[in-house]
Length: 282
Ligand SMILES: Nc1ncnc2c1ncn2[C@@H]1O[C@H](COP(=O)(O)OP(=O)(O)O)[C@@H](O)[C@H]1O
Ligand SMILES: [Mg+2]
Image 1 (cartoon, rainbow, N blue to C red):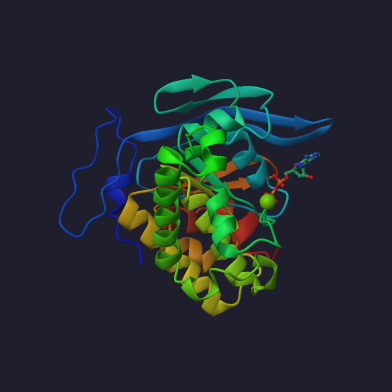
Image 2 (image 1 turned 135 degrees about the vertical axis):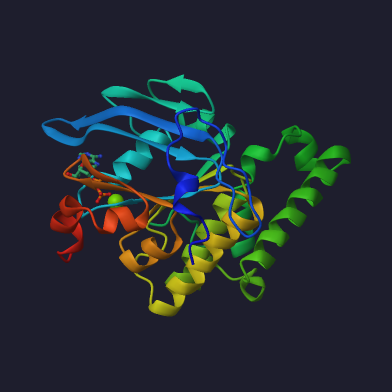
């Protein structure tokens, strides 16, 4: 269900926030601005002159055929790849490239197309691992579990338990992640990212390989995260039904170029997009 009125996400020249009205989601100012990003791997141009922005509290989808450059774009945003040209502005600060740790500290978390979980570790410990950046007390105190370190550990554990409740995986908290069905592993990966308390969440195909029911569950969790915590979400997804249902605006990439950008309705009716993507199976 899309609760945002199209005019509320239209680019406003003065950058003013749209006012929240009852029942209508509030979309804020631009939080992330991608400007003229190009990325090369030897002879391959993975991205060519890509510009788009992401507004606070919106769900922004990136779609396009395989090899279009979607994952590469997320990798530029979270500092895994260094773009050959262009810049990225996050909360008004402009960078020619991002640094992974800095990006995480600025409140950007991500999940991966291919899961990056510790398969032999429990659900609880995997989600706790997302909390590492937040753990401040010194390692000796932590090892001895005394004083502030113990209190801090308790606080982190409580936070992780809240995420486990939120994602409805209480029954699996002690289960090694590798023993869970794929759909639940993806949910744990989301939990690990949520443990960072991100302001911006980058999701790379969170529903890939899922059955219909698992996709519905994941869609609901993404909408709930966006609704309840106000988290801004950048989402790569192949299932067009899901994209049309849950995203506020959509960027379309094809062969590393941007060929469409707008509301789901606008993108669905864009001739270039229909030709490149919607009409063909990938
Ligand atoms: N680390 C890499 N080294 C070399 N080529 C890469 C690398 N990552 C991506 N590419 C290439 O960049 C292009 C875009 O890939 P990718 O971003 O993974 O696309 P998508 O996520 O849209 O399927 C592809 O041609 C891919 O082969
Ligand atoms: Mg990809």
